[in-house]
Length: 632
Ligand code: ADP
Ligand code: ZN
Image 1 (cartoon, rainbow, N blue to C red):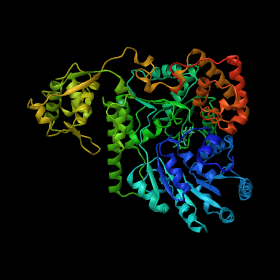
Image 2: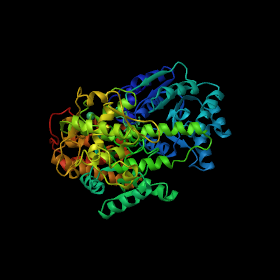
Image 3: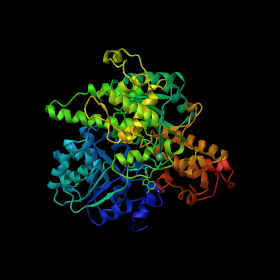
């Protein structure tokens, strides 16, 4: 090959036969010398957008990235693909850094990852002056915005650095944060010149969403994890204590699990994180301290043992599932207790000492608002994906077909009478109480607090008995979503009626409640894959012989990963192994057609996988999958 183009690079180094949505346009702009800003959700494939042009441009590409672990992962993956890349950050010693820069100056590396702090150092500037820098890529570009939660002052150094360069390289910036403020900040602060801006949707089609309300969360988790043996997953808990206990429980069940939270020593955290990444312990139980910079692509499920504090947090954490584009599940285990835990966490949140009282109040209000939106997510009977997308300012379809609410059956119940009782109760209480008290009154609860409030003499007291409080709350939530009721935006969160509530009292409007049909022993069931092709995973297309081959290839991958001390998914992704089972290649030419097998990976591992396939099949072509070819 004399002159390679972007397709050659994609095939040769990454083993992919085509670009995904948006990738090509960004790459073309870069190659034309135009700055770009790519806003794409996690897992959309941002790295390819700068790695492919980096290999086609004449000089070096610098990639600024905030996280050391991310850099290491990316560089490992690139080296595996046969791309010369290196990283320079504080995990290296001074002499290692000098050596890396010397090699870089000698033209050893095409791509260099660098921490923003490093840009300012004398040594690095001297290096930058001596070499040709074709592109500067800013990964996680939202870190430059003071609007975002992740503002990093060191990102401002990037601007200084660009300014100091004799020749301005083309600049490409990438992020998954799409708010308008952040977008404008990136363009403006980084000084992008008439950039090509591409925003792809936030939807992660391969993720299945569910909210479950098991009576015993532990039992649910045990069953789920056992039902997904050999798969990698993360279980998020709200507190360190929850993490410790759940981890013990799962260990007691013989499950290979590890844990992560801020109470562990740095050494322990590092070790446990590696155990997870290298699949020694495929299951991770953790607080939200875990995950920044974790790029493990084969996480098949993320379970939230408790409801998080906001949808922002939830979508980010849940989004760590299925980065490889394969089907994955995001399950939130909800119980009313979760709201109490979160309130407590909010009440005890450390406020920024520099804030004025007003600002603290504003922050508090915002947090309350976020918590409420999160709680409604757990209550809604409508499409969960649509709910999330709408929250982030996007439109989704009302029936995604890949969330629990879209696939489960509901019965519609007329709850007009119940709704009337709820409204009457709120009015009788003079709109002075929150949801807990109102539901307690209606259920005829005998709590000391209610006695204190003197509500036992109310007409509405126990008027909905024998309904359970949780059932009443569900209907109240539905009424809030339907705008019959609302909650005040302060810390008291008082429940009030809207003007539309009158229509219900007057008999002009009925209220319909969608109730999920009870499924027997919910916890024992594996949630996804019930209906439609959309939810099946790639490995589901393999028949039993195919699955057996898949297991053998997976064992081979594990063995190689141990030999090379690399995470298995960096050797080959699951989808690559499945594609091998479908295509059953017997020679190099056929092997190179497998998705994710490029020239270099072939040279490294191709023969061993060919041998395994030949041995298993006895060299005879056999169909290892259901359905027609081309479905994968
Ligand atoms: P992001 O940085 O946007 O979160 P990554 O760059 O990590 O996403 O890519 C996610 C996954 O998608 C990786 O496994 C990557 O190899 C894969 N991928 C990216 N582009 C393509 C493509 N054109 N064809 C097939 N797989 C791709
Ligand atoms: Zn849905």
